Amino acid sequence: MNIKTGKRISDSVDIKERIEELEIKMKKQERQLKKDVKEVYYSLHLTTMIKNALKDLRTDPELRSTAIETSLNLGGQFVLDKVLFRHHKGLKAYLLNAALKKLMSFFIAKNTDTILKKAGI
Image 1: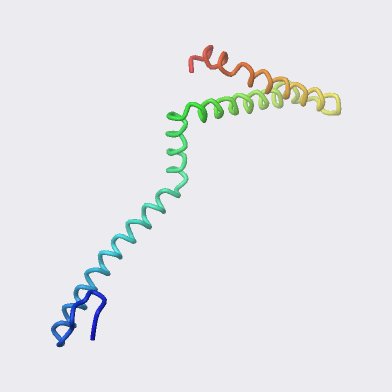
Image 2 (image 1 turned 120 degrees about the horizontal axis):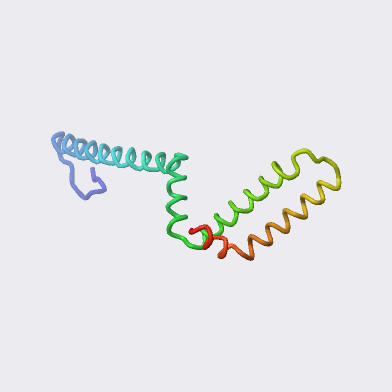
């Protein structure tokens, strides 16, 4: 009987040795598989994803700029919605709100660098 390793098995001692080798190999593979699964599981945690995203924000200037611009736009829209147009309902208020949001987004997009310099970021 031939085994893939090229060893010739001639008696029961050889079979037992080969079984032990395979069991050792299987245990090593199981440990490696458990380690790999833990790494994948850990990488899929929300906290790990957030940490990695924040690390990317610190290291990638383009991503950082985009994130800051988006945050400024969202903050401005929140202010417009909650402060200026809190009590106004109707078509005029809606159209004015939409126009101010567009204007604000345009202003932020064109002046992001200046805003960041003034803010000290």
